[in-house]
Amino acid sequence: MTVLVLGDQLTRRAGPLVARPDERVLMIEARAFATRHAYHPHKRTLVASAMRHFRDALRDDGRDVAYHETETFGGGLDAHFDARPGDALVVMRPSSHGAADRLRDLVTARGGTLTVVENETFCCSPADFDDWHEGGTLRHEDFYRHMRRETGVLMDGDDPVGGEWNYDESNRETPPEDYEPPDVPTFDPDATTRAVQDDYADANAESWADPAPFGWPVTREGALAALDDFVARRLPDFGPYEDAMVAGEPTLDHALLSAPLNLGLLGPREVVDAAVEAYEARGDVPIESVEGFVRQVLGWREFVRHAYRVGMPDLADANRLDATRDLPPVYWDGDTDMACVAEAVAGVRRRGYAHHIQRLMVLSNFALLYGVDPHALNRWFHVAFVDGYHWVSTPNTVEMGQYAGDLFATKPYAASANYLDRMGDYCAGCAYDPDATTGADACPFNALYWDFLAENEDDLRSNHRMGLVYSHLDDKRDAGDLAAIRERAGEVRAAVSASDPSRTE
Ligand SMILES: Cc1cc2nc3c(=O)[nH]c(=O)nc-3n(C[C@H](O)[C@H](O)[C@H](O)COP(=O)(O)OP(=O)(O)OC[C@H]3O[C@@H](n4cnc5c(N)ncnc54)[C@H](O)[C@@H]3O)c2cc1C
Ligand code: SF4
Image (tube, rainbow, N blue to C red; front, side):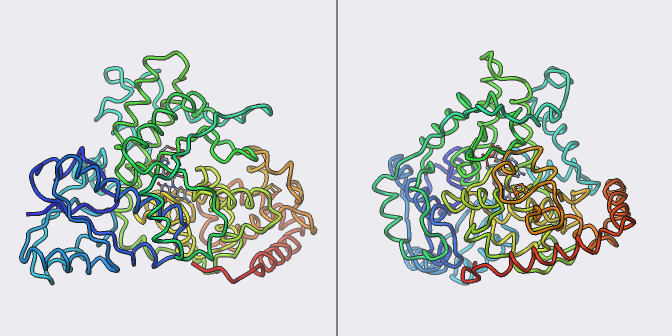
């Protein structure tokens, strides 16, 4: 028997590597996986370097590891079964829908067998989630409270620590003008990472010119250092500024932990425990920060994983609003006078990262208003972000960001400059006027916002959470302003779609 370790299952603390400490290990680094899409070079480097480091760590533990660098995954399996005909493989369930079946087909076609065991890199098992869900409504807040009760995290008996389940109301502050968030650590490439960079240097280089020097953690030790740094320096302000956007601050107090979490280098429970321990042991972590962080990891991350599981395969094609426009080139080149979009894309181009509010309220919101095909946007998130994997980008992008499915989103996250100006300071340095809707210098989000509401009126007006905004749309229509607004939206779309179309996914 051989334990097959996939590239996003890099943990020595769970799964068959623990259950079968004496079995040999198989890892396959398939070049075609890394090059079939225009992945950001940081993502490609991150995954391959983390895999090679993990291989070395296992060997240091004394494990027998076969590591195949091949063109295709099937080629790696060929090499394995040539050496060990008829071998039995065991693997943790892959996170992408259908991947376990595809893997089994590949293995059986080569005369082997595959046992798929539960993926233990999450806190909530499919059985636990299904027991809780029982086919009912998928509501994050209910699931989150269930997880708090089940795990005892931030619980005082049957009650939430601090008296409230959710401190979201306290998590919408904007930092003072002179606020300086702590610097974030970078992890310089070692020889292994540099070898990966050389190996993949020519792959899709034209799509991602001039990224920042690579600085993501690629080992367990690096990931733990990143966790320590977040908990020590950024956790205290994480809560209050969680929804803020500040020009020139691409991280603010966010954790930068999604990449090591999604690779398995960190476990969700240990990052939650580290935050709670800091809250209990120190006096500088307010309840709204620790609760906000726990909600993201124990709540949202686990929730979207299962929403994906329950929602697939339909979610992969969902398009409730029938949005079909191409993803505009600005998502690749960032070449725009819209300060908020330019800054968010610049962050993605530099290091494959934008923080949550940039993702939701700038990048996803703009695509929603523009009418981008949700799956084109999802593909972009998948290839452009260091933490982008189908199981997590799909529910976040297709369901939450684009309102394309019918799983858990109760209304579209659509917002005009009014929201962006309130929650961020980009507008102050922007070429456009956030208070204007028509005219050449009017913020493009504004006309697109009203046009989006008009375009999707049949689908959205009956949503009781949209009643107020539709009454505002009625006011504009009654005042005779809507035609000019929609004309401006058309001009914005034409201008945005006309920029350099040479980059593709
Ligand atoms: C349109 C869109 C696309 C996204 N695509 C991805 C993606 O491909 N991969 C990904 O990991 N996250 C994705 N997210 C969720 C979230 O934005 C990122 O997890 C987060 O920004 C990562 O940065 P951080 O580690 O600094 O997170 P923080 O803001 O510091 O949050 C802490 C941790 O909470 C978890 N988390 C928070 N919100 C979510 C969420 N909605 N879904 C899953 N985990 C969450 C992450 O593990 C994160 O590391 C997406 C969100 C949106 C709106
Ligand atoms: S004015 Fe509009 S485009 Fe400019 S930063 Fe504000 S919201 Fe973005």
